[in-house]
Image 1 (cartoon, rainbow, N blue to C red):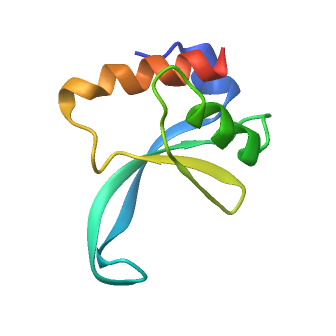
Image 2: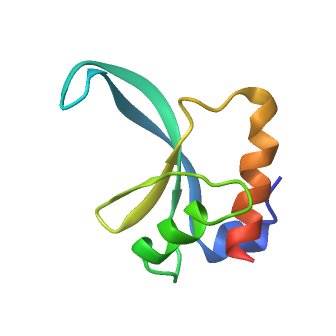
Length: 91
């Protein structure tokens, strides 16, 4: 669970997303998913670097100035780990 102060300060939201599956640069299928969006005071490129350098690295993506963590490959038992890393990076 993430503290509401961190959520509000970094504009963290759970949003619907679509991910691509298939053959690399020529994806063959869109899959509905959900993502965590983070609009922090920290610039998106630095935020991405901080998540990659965390105690358990998380690889996200940047779109239109917002950093996203897609949850397509996160299992229910990994959700708390993701929350812990978000707190680690944004605290």
